[in-house]
Length: 209
Image (cartoon, rainbow, N blue to C red; front, side):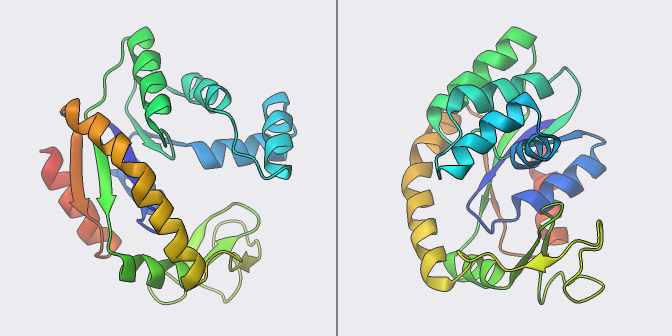
């Protein structure tokens, strides 16, 4: 199984990437995780990525596309965090063509604004490994401490209702073209992702049968 996950901040992409990779015994390819790990290792790639992040700039499409190319093979995978625009989608198509690999579906996790605000305004993020928690729906076993790496859990400064609304507006505006791209390719699957992770997983599995 080869799946591309797409959705707004707070749509549950990271959570579904984990549970889908476990269910389908597939490699989880999370662009954010890969970039954070490279920065932590202080590798050549990490140094390049860090230079853009420190300036508040987006990492260029060409660079992230190279990262994805290095991580995709002919095995099963769940791709999270890429592509984010049509130029990246075109680059991904070329990468897969070069590797003679196809994908099963581009899954759009569709969530209403109220649910996204609730999820993100109560989200906790681990400073160490980047794992996400929720104060109500998915709290850590110990307050303020990550279950996985025992790192400190913090609330992001941009996880306020006002900022979340603006981020969602930007996402919805920019997402139209990429959804059209995969619709035309006949690969787009929309899933209502407003429920809990088990309900969303059940819907995804049903649509992929």
